[in-house]
Length: 593
Ligand code: F6R
Image 1 (cartoon, rainbow, N blue to C red):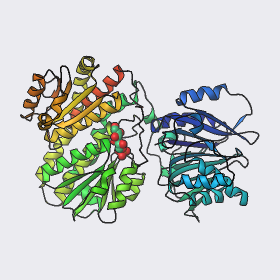
Image 2: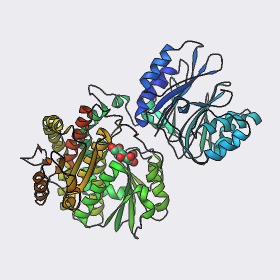
Image 3: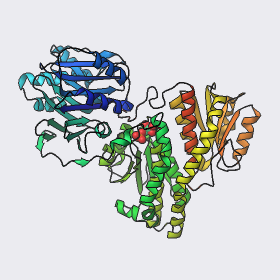
Image 4: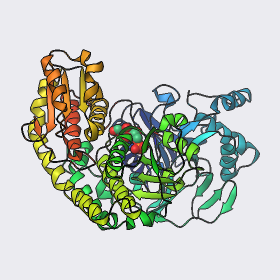
């Protein structure tokens, strides 16, 4: 949710911290702050409840002691405590010697705080993270070793954490992680730490991801411990991101860039996996047991992608498929022979990881993620990489499309490998996937012409309905989700047949109703019912539609429809003056339940 950056470099740390925070801002943007060691061995803390741009201004305006190359930074998505400067990270101990940035949730912060306050520690914020500073301070009274102090402190925590602890007096820096992502990297300029490799990709070609229970001291040489035991430093992994992929280029915002990248992303995926999908080797290579049923576990847009994959699997192979909203996994009862497919672009979504706590001992788990170094990838029995490239816009766009294509290809491969479909059928399906890049390109071009005018006609509407049927339904759901998260307007998706069972009461003169019209003839009845009540129908369909973007659909439904839906949401948000890359109250990686 929040973002962490830290640097130990030979020149001034602040430009690295500020650049890193700007790249991390999509993970949370309620406040941002840095703590940098000064030349005289104290710490300068600068925080802002505005965006990183304002923090930059505050840093530029400061005067005083020179800053050194050791510093930490944080961008916050508020969980405990309101959005105000004293709740912004970094937090400090009573003396100001220890500074800490933290991602995750300290579940036992209440009792720890009471205990520390009773011992005389002064808390200045409402946030759970502050207990860490005082726990480290307390441990240092007994032994001056920061590494040991962080091990002692983290052993008392319950919950999840990625932490960077800076000791201004000794210039030592120790990091720790448990159920929250954190990477460390050594580069020619120095050592870097980040909650997301993308934040430091410009300076670092390789990185090491911390595992649960790791505590690491950076410095001349790294000291690595795992659950309190010293271990060798793990071998570094090449960074998956070219730094250029994180730049906006000529695009007005990341969402525009990422929508536009979809044909290229899909073309690369299809190129990479088409042959292996058609002959079954993609599935065989995963090394998973056969399955009789599938359970898709995911949240939000990934859940909608899962619905598409499930629809395709049912349609092609007649395989029963359960859809499990990850946060409601307690309610799910899975039958024997089930394969769990956990879908998450970030691979760090807490609801998905908690759902696995229920399933992973009893069922094989296949992860479908855009982050093969994530907690989800580490826990799954096999991993499918979406390879969508870095997605910075908080609203998922290209990762949805990539999830659908990789997921459908894997299911085709599983069906042919298990003899449920023959190779000719598999080749025919893969040929359909090969058509997708061109279809997505055309859909984007048509939408670019039609959407601005359509949006000006519905800009004042307070609520929207999205209708679909069968294979079109997950796209209606995705359209509604995108519109509400970006434009802050109410939007509901319904199976078109349900309209007359309640939602039709919402339709009045001018109510916008977006219909994913992939050619199912019964959709016309719903369209007529809306028009009869004065509703403003927008059809995304074949020739003659308001947005004529769809061709004949495969078993995965009208995938290209998602592009006009994304563009509709973005255009409405822009016309309403909203920030499309950083919608209010949201964050890219939802690491709290
Ligand atoms: C919507 C969106 C969210 C995410 C959801 C799951 O645009 O981005 O609904 O899809 O929070 O996130 P991941 O896929 O990282 O598990």
